[in-house]
Image (tube, rainbow, N blue to C red; front, side, top):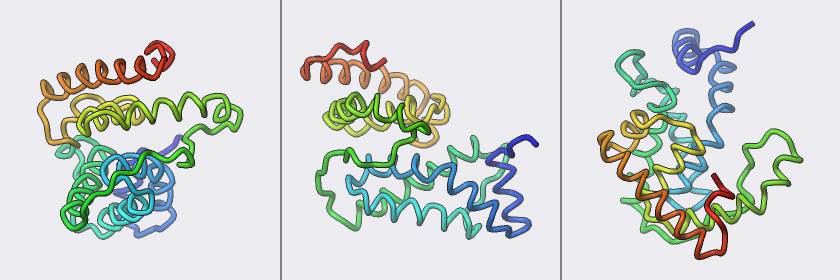
Length: 188
């Protein structure tokens, strides 16, 4: 049996109110959303809470994903998360905190996780030194595998702006890694 798409799972959940379908969506996207939200709020606990809020909004149906009108379910979900993070930041003064090394790994194999742990820590350190827009566009592009059009929808920017941010972000990341004594190619 083929794996159901996010869109199909969500629409079936709304129709059938089957919690197992929604749980599957949560499992697919919770870690990605936490990483993404962490880039905004710089607090792991706040990022987890905002991830839960994002899924609560999706589950409530107060704002609905509409196939064909929305770019895609994941893009729509990240846009909700971004809006939740912005609302959170308006209510709370942000406090700088570096990306924690103990965030859950997205690698399914423990040996893959161990082999890349040091490199991942260094990359997060370099990403932390970037401007917020650069960090966000690179995260969505490389860690979430989103297309420029999807990133534009999430960030509320044009495709041209996304390309410019990507190019400038890559250059800034390269400079940051070189200052740390690494070659950019090690992380590409």
